[in-house]
Amino acid sequence: MQPNLQREQNDMAKSVIDRIEYLVLLVAEFARLNKLSEVQSYRYLQQYGALTLCEKHYNIMHTLSVEENLQTLREYCQRKGGNL
Image 1: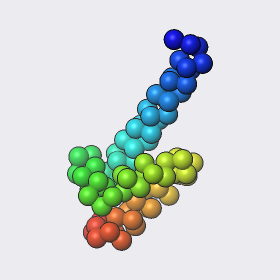
Image 2: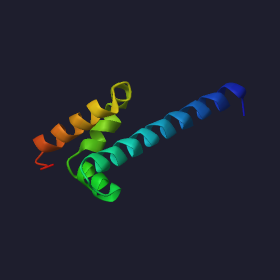
Image 3: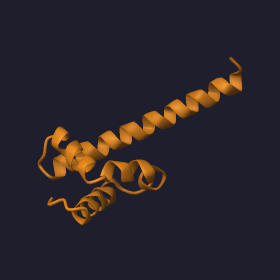
Image 4: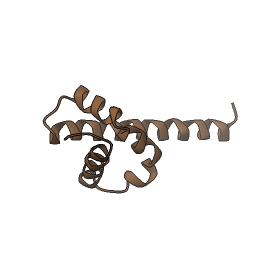
C-alpha cells in the first residue's frame, strides 16, 4: 500500500474513533447528570434524536465544553418531547 494512502486511512480511522469516544463521553456524562444508567441515557438520547444531532454537528460540539453540550442535549430532547 502506498504511504500516503496508508496515512489517509489511519487519519480516517482516528477520526471515527475520536467521534465514538466523544459520543460515549456525552452519553456517560448525560447519565451521571440525570441519575440514569448509561443504557437508559443512550436510549433516551437516541429516542429523541440527540445522538444524530451529535454526529451531524460533531465538528462544532467537540470544541465546546461538555457542560454546554449536555445542556444543549437536554434542551433538544425536551423540544422533541423528552421530560428530563
